[in-house]
Image 1 (cartoon, rainbow, N blue to C red):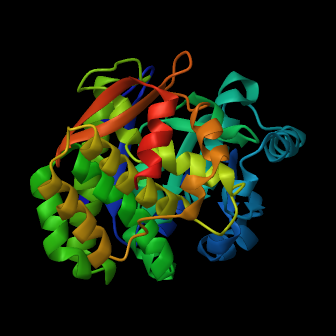
Image 2 (spheres, rainbow, N blue to C red):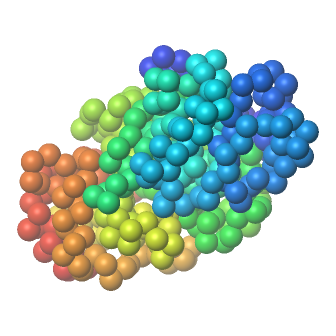
Amino acid sequence: MIKKITYKNDSQSTSIIIKNNFAKKYINEQIKSNNKIFFIIDKKVKYIIKDLYKLNKLNCLFLDGGEQIKNIYTYNNICEKLLSKKIDRKSIIIAIGGGTVGDLAGFVASTLLRGVKFNYIPTTLLSQVDSSIGGKNGINTKNGKNLIGVFYHPKEVIIDASFLKTLSYRDIKSGYAEIVKHALIKDYSFFIWLDTHYKKIFKLNQRYIEKTIYKSILIKLWFAEKDPKENLTNKYSRAMLNFGHTIGHAIETYYKYSKKLNHGEAISIGMIIESNIAYQLGYLSNIELNLIKDHFKKTKLKILDRSIYNKKILRIIQKDKKNFDDNINMILLKKIGESFFKKNINIALVQKLLNKI
């Protein structure tokens, strides 16, 4: 099966191609058509380019994946290496790897020479359904996650589900957490479909995993196209995609982006906590809260971490990008399939709500 989605952004359109076992052919085509390609590649998937690398003497930078690489020092190091290899504005940067490699490569492409063409081949479920879509790129600081960044869209995104066979079960679940998020904020029927077919998805049944990826991308684009720069605070706001992320990003920062929790695990915890907050504030019904909890338990997604009771978490939450003044802004659920932007939650109330969980 091959599916193609095209969406428009600031200055160009982006093509998303979903096709199994297509990545290597695509890379070969790009090499033949352009002699100024610079690859930024996750070491875990360097096998995809091994033969081509030897044959064509390609310009490749190999990185370890993980949130630890998304920092100003790695960014500067990559820029210096690319400049020393005489990259110019007619060059193309192609990122191959998970979300952290894509975020960093996109940030490099957006700033180097004030903008170099950028294509992306995401290789994890998390990056295929989330970080490769919508143009957000950035790096972390000690104060929080993705606090330095830009909106810069790849020209092409190649979604090849065959990469998923190389992932651990933990990594599959990490990506699945973002898929569930998309269902919870926008599509009740998709949530029920996931609840029915999650075992087939976890087994990477081609029909079910490709349908899941395709549907998840469409939901993300629904928000990203209506609110490209995350300026709105109504039901069309791209900020809805941050459901679970206010708490989730705080937990990741608390653990200094270590391997103790991956992104999907932190967001899973964030979604459960923020669903509990929505219930305690009188928005989400107890029935729907329990539906969400039951699904997370069935799929063995993480639902709690002791770090949420630490006062440092509150200080980190206060630095979240969605906040204004000294109050907390958070994405909450009214019901499964309907989210909203909750403004001005007093920090003392957040502390009280967390203590009840």
